[in-house]
Image (cartoon, rainbow over all chains, first blue to last red; front, top):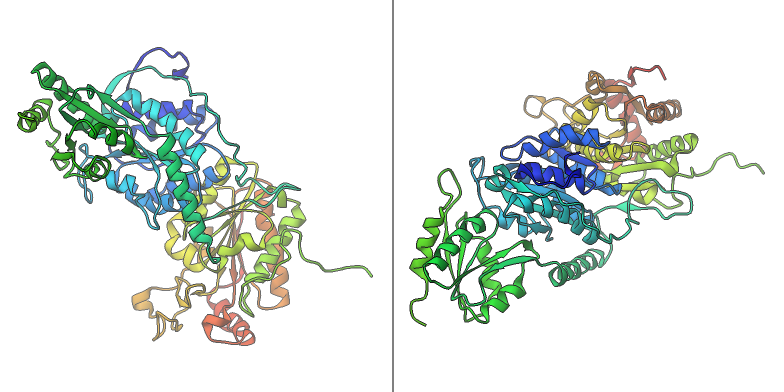
Length: 360
Length: 247
């Protein structure tokens, strides 16, 4: 197994996801071909059976997410992956999994949309990912890698968080992070204390209660009780699991904020600004849900100007606005996704120069 | 006094929500008897679907996963692949299986998943109030075919037992009815055979059970039963359409 050596390897982001899933003990993968994520099912169709796991190329994205639901209900670690059009089809199943308190990992390698859109990178599925995406009002854990190493590490984290909090977890990347190759240290699976899966459906053994995995609540007050329970769980996530990266924010007069591939480009632009003597920092949320609100609030206590950069017409900016202090301002620079719209570091540096506070 | 008839162990001692004259209760019982007779209750996972069948977990004393509408065969696939040592069955109605879930059933059957599918065909959407189903008979009036099913616009009813028998992945396919004691006894035998396929790991098994829905047909239970005899069975012939291992 490639991950056994722990020596640095040079792989695509999508391959890193697949390798991390194996390292995390994923036993079942269900998927459907769609660019730019097909390296994930290709890799797992080869490696998962060798390790005693199950790989199914499903008849549809709907089939795949429901196979994930069924496998996860029996207690095994399982995953699916797709891109925008396929993720839209999976939303029904994701809603049922959320309603049934089922873990499961979903990887979304975002491409341009709406509709068939294009295969170029996009961050325009931020809302779909962080607002639940399906019907009924729920959230899922959303992790946003900005490097191939993070594709690896955050995929393993997604399995752990999903099991601990009994909710689906999504790795939200795009075709830049999925398709590029970088050096990766294939870290061993983290040692995490996981709660016992007493709820799993595996056959009602003598003396044990019947286990039912369901999302139907018809009794008076049952549905409301479920929602309040989940709200408490989301709060616990927010209290314990927010992750973010700050770069040179301590003295910053302008803080760039971006996630995933855009944050990678922005980081170069921040370096260019520092070289030019401008006090510019970067705030990169790693968990998009839970969104690191407190970290933003703390930053905005001192720095009053933010520049949100996205490969979309602006989605994460909603969360940034809600998180920062009232007297802080957030500007926006974004480009709708599509061929040719990925910004360059020079382009972002121009935006920094344009918006950098000249007098305070 | 010797007790000669009792509730199967695999069924809970509760009242069901099914309407008077509905055949779901009979199908539940026959499935439960099969689980009891094979002694597999403790290793069985039931997959409930959407419709009147959703309360499976309330009546069967087995572990149950509730599937989204039509997706039970995909959910069963995931469960069976993850736990191949378990007995996995789905229990689905006609709207669930033959309309919204047609893709899932066809592909699970074609892959030859080692599961058992119990398909209850009552020619209507029962839970939502009697709308036109993919198995609604030509000319049949429903709440969404008030002038009768027009096959030139609505297509003809799907004959699922025959359709699935054509797939190489299907090991066993049969259609049964519950309209008289003889047919009930035959249904019991064939439902047991369907589970035998899974117990012996011989592949995908499918049972289509013709059932009455007096409430949504606007009939009393006796008239509904006669409709099964006079209208449904002539259109949906009973029989074993595939029995690849001759079990």
